[in-house]
Figure 1: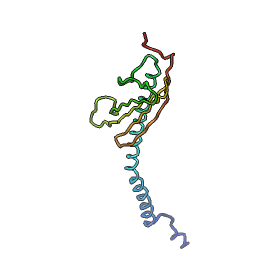
Figure 2 (figure 1 turned 90 degrees about the vertical axis):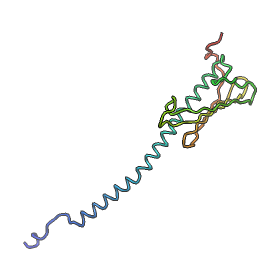
Figure 3 (figure 1 turned 45 degrees about the vertical axis):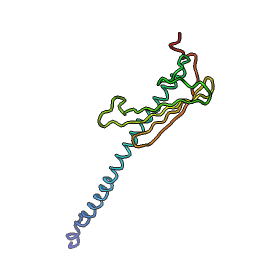
Figure 4 (figure 1 turned 120 degrees about the vertical axis):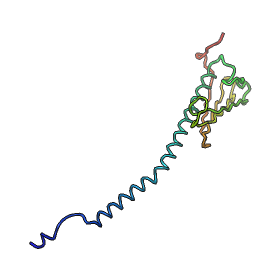
Length: 152
């Protein structure tokens, strides 16, 4: 009878302190990872926008060159006529695509068009982010008669 009176189940104060300490360590570990997560999310956003700009520029130049009526590049320079001749253009574009406002990031877009043969060109685009990370891609573009538009 005496043993049943003294054997009370429950949580002691030391157990509560240990559990609280373990929870605090877990919360502190999660909080210490938060700043790195924000940095990586920002870098990911920058690279995503750079990839969008890269593909827009690449597609725009590709479609322009495919039209047999176009003899000049999108920026006005004549398409290279001699094999292995090259033209280049570098522009700065804001992340909003409009005039720069506070908080906008400015990307540098460099386009190079190289004549590979009489009817094909190599279009290379390189985009540099504000953090100096660079992505690039190239395509070989050939003339397409069915895309002829604007010819007289």
